[in-house]
Amino acid sequence: MHIPVRTDVRIHRWAVIASTIAALAALGAVPAHAASTEAATTAATPAGICGSGYTQIDSHAFRNSTTELGRVYLLYNASTKSNCVVTLHSSSTSGYALPTGAWLDVDGDGKNQAKDQGTYSSYAGPVRLAAGSRCVKWGGMIEAGVGTYTYTSPWEHCG
Image (cartoon, rainbow, N blue to C red):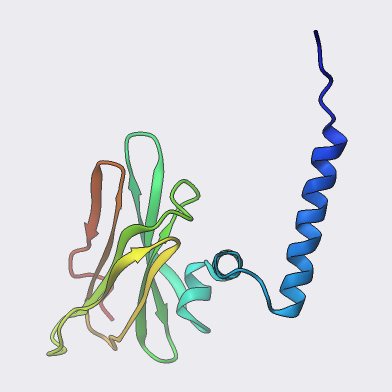
């Protein structure tokens, strides 16, 4: 016996759910996870996370054999002479709370490495340091599946 599936009912339910979420958002009553997902979706670009004036100068992808899991970005703001590092989850890991980190060190500045490392579902950072004409060492990490993927650059991007 064949029982027909009523797709119009499913579509209607999703429309009701979507309009309810939109109405709650207008009232400022969106569930915390929905609001944080929306915020992460709209602001989750390296330049958006680092802030005004930062432009990307380098990046490194974290990959298992076939899939990009995330990417660490190095950005620079010429007017403030500051660098910024962000590790951003890729579409395959976005939304999953995973150990994620970003770090930055400036050669000869007498300070310790700046670091942001924790369990995040979209990105780690931003980590910012003034570099002036000094070299920087930057990197990040993401732990996904059975592996931890880490990158630390050599001293580079001097001046």
